[in-house]
Amino acid sequence: MADYPDFEDAGFLRQHIADILAFYEPHAFDPAGGFFHYFRDDGSIYDKDTRHLVSSARFVFNYANAFMYTGTPHYRDWAAHGFAYLVSHHRCDDGHYIWQRNGSTIEDSRAMAYGHAFVMLAATTASRLDIAGASDMIAEIWDFMETYFYEPEHGAYADERDAHLAVLSAYRGQNANMHSVEALLAAYQTTGMPRYLDRASAIAHKFTVELTANTDGQIWEHYDTNWQHDWTFNIDKPDDLFKPWGYQPGHQVEWAKLILQLDHHRPADWHLPVARHLFDTAMQKGWDNECGGLVYGYAPDGSFADAQKYFWVQAEAISAA
Image (cartoon, rainbow, N blue to C red; front, side, top):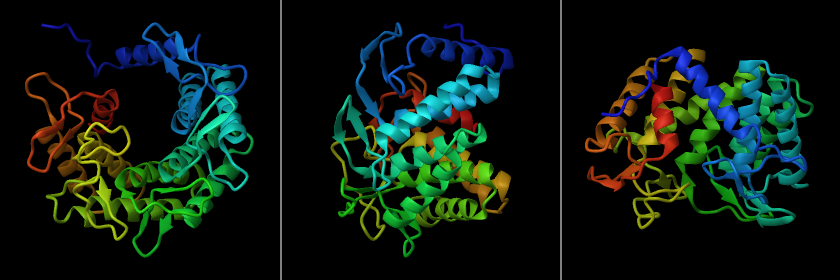
């Protein structure tokens, strides 16, 4: 039987954080701007040019948190370095942030609500370090998403627009809204402005209570323009990285975590029962009894739609627990 470390031991967790930072330390920083995104197991870089908006934003978030956790001065410098890259290489003149670039070539210039949520999250952590421009960016992303994504008649964010911001996709999804709640909670924690907490609370209730009334409290991923469940979208792509078909245990537990964070700021009677139900259901229906771990997705009939194991799913379950 494998000899696992004690995952509840504070010393192990501190060392694990240090080990993760040490893995990236000699490889990630790109002096020309931002960070490299693609690494082999030995840390060597196999793609120096591709930059994805989510990863660019997460590097800012990670190194800002690394500085707040360790106090190591250059982590603040690296967070500022990554923040500057977001502005100089992802931001367009119209205020939207492109999805992906390869060196000087823009490969995907769509405006994605999902990506902008991560930009807001990066801005909130950078703002806590007083990085220039970060506080203004929080409000700028709020205004942009309010103009181009938020649908007040439905109380939720739409998903994507074309590069010219003229065409709004017919697709609607929970994923962008979930990460928007994550960013909004962080924005409230950073700024103290009630509008961020108000919006986070309203969206959380919509997706975990209102839209789950007919799904036994489980959150479906995909919807049409009227926010009705779309049961067939990507039915042949249960392994899609951003829009997989099926119920996602990782998203159920992530929502549970977010509801508990929401409850910390503004307690409500529905929070704990819903969070418990989401977590328990994900563990019951998504756990692989043979091999261990939470699977990527399961179908409405309870069968595994994608039995592969993804790191982030397990990480979100640990965080929620």
